Image 1 (cartoon, helix red, strand yellow):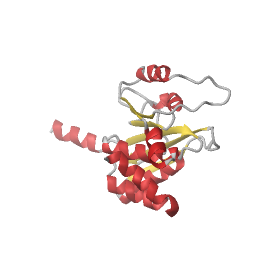
Image 2: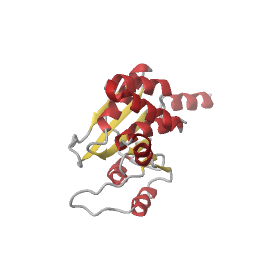
Image 3: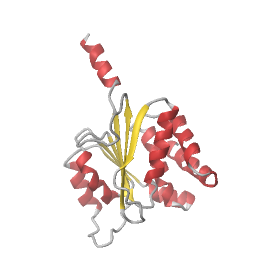
Length: 200
């Protein structure tokens, strides 16, 4: 009986994701892809752009929550299951949502912020390790620049990588459907290729 109740508790667990980066990296597009994928799977979800500073170079943070009877679109303090950072320094801005259970997936990219000190990778990782040991770094920008000459595809690449590693509880075909629904036709093939490349 206890096992059954514990199993039910696990099945009812909400999934909480925070995506951080700077303006121009496609966070809003990623959020819309996730929303379409969740809709495709008939899952309850809510998403939100928290800050809305989407000008190039400004911090952008989006939240995505999925589960049963999701009431708020915002992830609570210490409640993130996955934090996807498209730029490493921006991962530090998301520590409010992190705990020992949080999986960090970092794009190995550091973009100088005007008027602020550029942090080194070790400094960033040391701060993250105070919260969790579950940290994975992927050279998504480098891979997408070499393969497609477009670093902006790093976000879609990381979505695919997260799904493959089971950090993201959505099916591959659902995310592909989301990409098809959201990405303009002239950019669709390269986005699907970047997503599929991360799955190989």
